[in-house]
Amino acid sequence: MKFFLIFLSAFLVNNIILIRFIGLCPYFGVSRRLSTALGMGMAVIFVMAVSSWISWIVYHWVLVPNGLVYLRTASFIVVIASLVQFLEMFLRKNFPHLYTALGIYLPLITTNCAILGVAFLNIDYGHSFIETTFFSIGTALGFTLVICLIASLRERLDLAPIPESFRGNPIAFITASLMALAFLGFVGLFGLSI
Amino acid sequence: MNLVLKAVVTLGSLGFALGLALALAYLRLAVRVDPRLAKVLEILPGTNCGACGYAGCEKYAEELVNSDVPANLCAPGGQEVARKLAEVLGVELKEVQRRVAVLACQGGRAEMKDAFRYYGLENCRAAHLVHGGSKSCMYGCLGLGTCVEVCPFGAIKMGANGLPIIDETLCTACGLCVEACPVHIIHLVPFPQKVYMGCASHDKGKDTRKICSVGCIACKICEKSCPYDAIHVVDDLAVIDYSKCTSCGICVHKCPTKSIVDRVKVRPYAIIGLNCNGCGECVKVCQFKAIEGELNQRHKVLRERCIGCGLCFQVCEPKAITMAGALGHKEKTVQYG
Image (cartoon, rainbow over all chains, first blue to last red; front, side, top):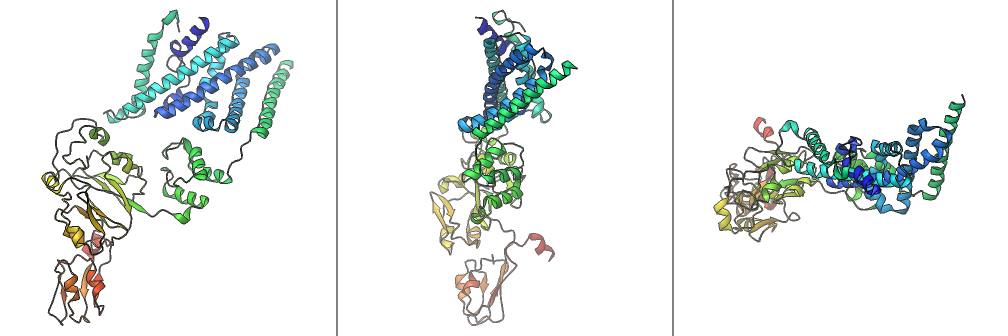
């Protein structure tokens, strides 16, 4: 039950985009089409899970024993950047189809704040390794859900008779804010709070 | 001091270890790529916009190198990038003939009746879902400008009569409008082809006549008048065989409903010179009664009737006929010159 609640909290109640406002650049950048949004979401699920594990290991096995907790920002960035590089090479060699499916989004994720943010949140909440797994996968699924929702909405918005000045990003911002309000409705689910 | 040293050593060794691991991994995991790939990637704009239909420039570059993908899909790069790509990939030998998009419908607001009033999204694809659009002809242009929206080169404008006008100097024949049109009435024709069918209606002639003043009524006059056997009525619609058509323009003038379109603004006209022997061959061949004269005397061309098809020019034994005003002359040249 504890793991389920951690997962649900990360997935809906504390949704990384709509409640925490982390990872907003892909939220607007690659949400024009559902297919690209889905590709980005899959890449995020993949990288977020792996990078949380590695950064958890680096933090608890390298930084804490040496009393270098204040170095976590720098070391996490180094770890995540090299991890993505490694993943890219590994996938390209062994899973070319997955590599082509993820495409440009895999390297783009290196600079995604959501990845680094989740690594930090895991440390801040004092999660164990298994809790880290549930938390990061829940967060990544929440990210994917929300980015696919806004992509579907924006595909419809392209056809709607919107006033000239609201076309494109302005109406997307308004839609996003309404979505964030709607997601506040999940607060209190199973007694979970923000 | 100790603290700084510790930090430097830890971060440094972390970075070194990761770097080493990446380097070692590269030895095992490196994937050999086509050397042309790097060149192609350099040529592509690198904006990863996806206009080519692939997930980013890298994917398009891969497709270009590995499979037989057209080199002219990059919309932001345009003609220049397409030319460079063809150079690098060595595909310039089988260069695609220049083509141009044409609209196979002339039924604007004045020419064609509406079947009903359409209140909805200003988009042809949406309008087409409602009983195939508001036009009474199911092959007619809906005129809501979806082709105008998709054209990345600004080559299509909406005309006053509710039909799009394609600027052939800007058209690159990318085919986006062809795909976007729900009625499928934008066609790509070879650029040198000056005459094209301005109607796509397969309705029976009687039905077409009721709803549209410029639709093909399948009367077969064009078929009979064509000296090159290049136009035939198939399924109640005249179809031009571009391999035989010489764009002479006879069918354009013969067509009773004017449903064949001529891209040439001003046609040339025939002049009969002094060495005409009056054999009368040209009179026989002219389909517009534009040449007259007594036998064995110099003949005369009636300028207002001559359409410049050039048939008389071909049959003239003493080579007395010249065609004045070459194909493609602009209206302006004629007006002022």
